[in-house]
Image (tube, rainbow, N blue to C red):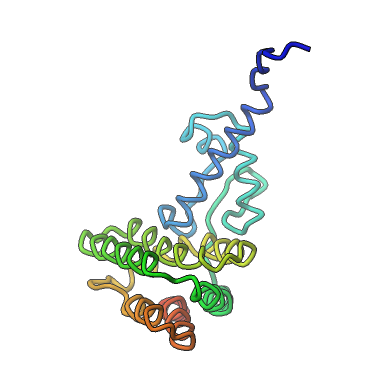
Length: 221
């Protein structure tokens, strides 16, 4: 056996898999961050053109997103983001109320000064997005605030469940942003940071629960 034998070139299957992942990740981010509005329809061919890939990677990426509840797929091949009913919004809000306070509580023992400073920096970015009336940046940085905290929980399965809820809620969160017309930082973020500094688990759970459900329930009214 030659010790320095050249490595084989990537196969066509590997290249297709990389294209699948690229389209999936980029579409997933667009949906989660509210770049795609509720009820927006696309075709597989149009998605392929948008990302410069063939129909196969576009179809596979869409299949994964359909499985996660981020897209629905018609028999004609058109995909669309869901327009959530009030009952569905209430259900997803309840899931956030269950998952996210628990993630925050699990993160609390590891909430050292560097984490708190990072959350405050993200809050500054959220304020800048609000000042620009940039809905997509607001949603993206708001989720970054929560994800940064929850990563300290060291509970990857629970965080994956929370991210699936965020994905299903992304277009609706854009509608919520437009409805609220925010002009200042979410007050509950300040309460979350204060509870982390104080090591106050009940206060942290309460602040997180209020932050992730209050606006959503306004949409369901």
